[in-house]
Image (cartoon, rainbow, N blue to C red):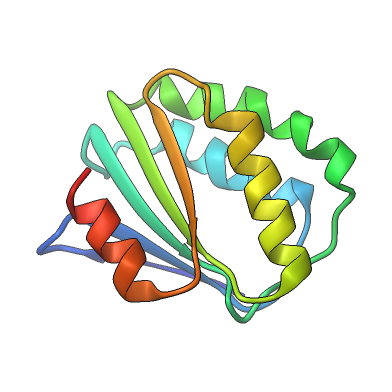
Length: 124
């Protein structure tokens, strides 16, 4: 299950995932962003995957880049922080960051604590 809530004070979308996630779920996240008119143009998102499991082939992460680029067309900037705790999920998040981090106006950081992730997003 994924839940979405907007932290009105800091204008940060909080996405909480508690199920098994795959490449399609990542792509769907960015496709949803590409269609949304509800969020600030300087978009900030905290993705909490501490209770989720990733079931994906790391060699297919390159399939996510087109959807990230599509979402970027809808925003001036996207800053995302992901919270992960388990080793495999951490590796996947770091590979995603390495693959998509060079995109213009897009920043993605991996964190293990909510406090650090929120501090980073607030300062972006």
